[in-house]
Amino acid sequence: MGRAVLVAVPLILAVTLFVLFATQMGRDPSFVPSALLNKPVPQFSLPPIEGNDQPGFSTADLLGEVTVVNIWASWCVPCRAEHPLMMRLGARDDVKLYGLNYNDAPQNALDFLEELGNPYFAIGADRDRKISLDWGVYGIPETFVINAEGIITYKFIGPLSERSYTQSLLPAIAEAVAAGKT
Image (tube, rainbow, N blue to C red; front, side, top):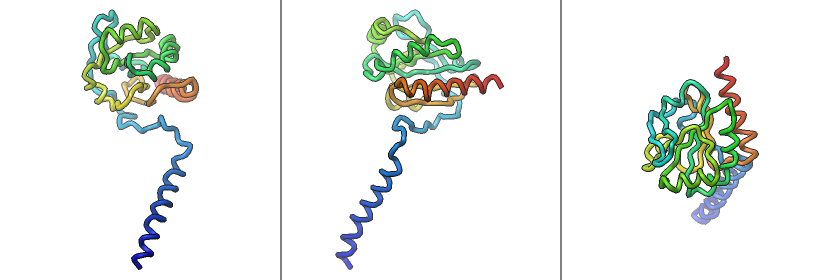
């Protein structure tokens, strides 16, 4: 009896792991459900980046129209990779793009924007990461779509690619805009 258990336990464990991995194949690794999805944005107020002429922003700024909040930092290599897409998004007329600068030295953030361009309508500095925690951020970049009522309708974790930008983010923005017109 003892020998049968010793053989059965590893076999059961192996089959369980196989089933677990097999059911997860093909899933989008950037899709992680957010606890804030379909809930109001947290109450917050962020100051501007020191030395930047743009204002910071708060919860009230994200009400009344569809907005996108992008969490980024100058030291974040994936943020640099997705920045051309943020530049394209910032040029659009159907949405306002806000930047939440995460745990960054002010001069480094300003240098990043000067080098790559500044797509943001406003940028808030979250130097101590407290506001980011309220947003449920655990890695950057992260991008949120907020509808006109201030409800988070979409969250993308990680750097946007051309594919995720066109197939996920833009449709999420269009959906939020269309929902506001009905």
